[in-house]
Length: 60
Image (cartoon, rainbow, N blue to C red; front, side, top):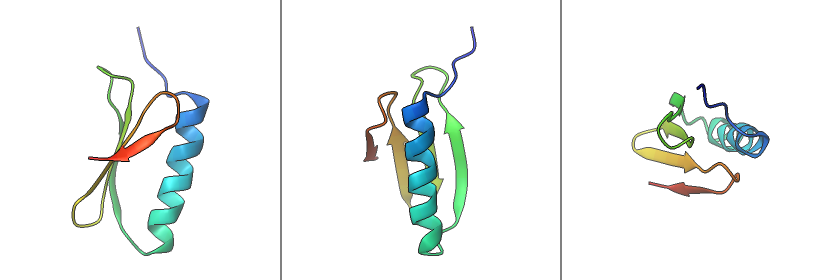
């Protein structure tokens, strides 16, 4: 079974990526973790963000 990101995750992912690129921070990886269903973003020198299925997020 393929897990797809939720609408909330998609909106938050675009919002966070836009905020990162507004400060000229490079984004290296945007990936859906198939085990948890969370979206992972790796950006800049050491920015790691996890977006949960409900659209909430946190720095790792």
